Image 1: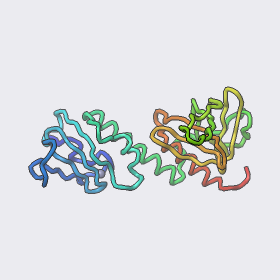
Image 2: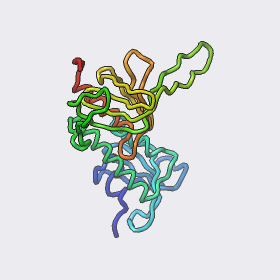
Image 3: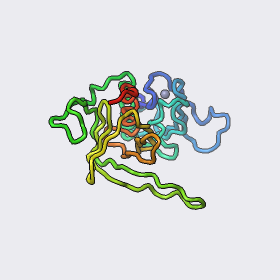
Image 4: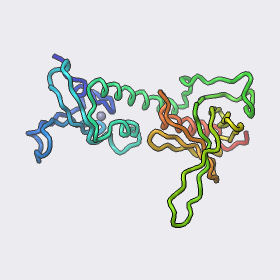
Length: 239
Ligand SMILES: [Zn+2]
């Protein structure tokens, strides 16, 4: 008999042998459900486990009460493993693989390893792009928006979408091939951030920003990290 995966290794931090199983009878205050808890001694994640502890062949499901410690390393996992959601075995293992990949990608970027993005120069380059600019990322369905001023006593108005198109992030700039016109800004002018599955590249001292959603294998946090690491490499030199 094999043990189910969540008892062998942590689905969040992927350490093995760190899972402590606490049965309902061992809990100090045995209130609520009757499922055992899985506590990871490495990342402090706590999950409710519903399945046979000694048989990995049968179905199980898991629900995370808390994910990771307070470090930002687990932000993606926190967004995917919501405390209100049960995850069936296959779904939980797939999410766990995504969490691993996403963390690995961010580490690669922080170590300035961009090879997996397959950087390239475009020939011919689109308007406003220099022939020697290296394109690190191409994103579809990117919007260029303007924040609307909040009027006193009124709700904040929705931002105005000025344009949409294909966005290129290069070694020095962000370019938008918009439906209305082409635009570009230096990375040194950009402040990138994300919220849930949406990334924002704000133009400093301005109410204008580029924005888009996470794409299949590129989470908003990874996109924001690409902006930050590349603009850190560019510095403030005039490109
Ligand atoms: Zn863990």
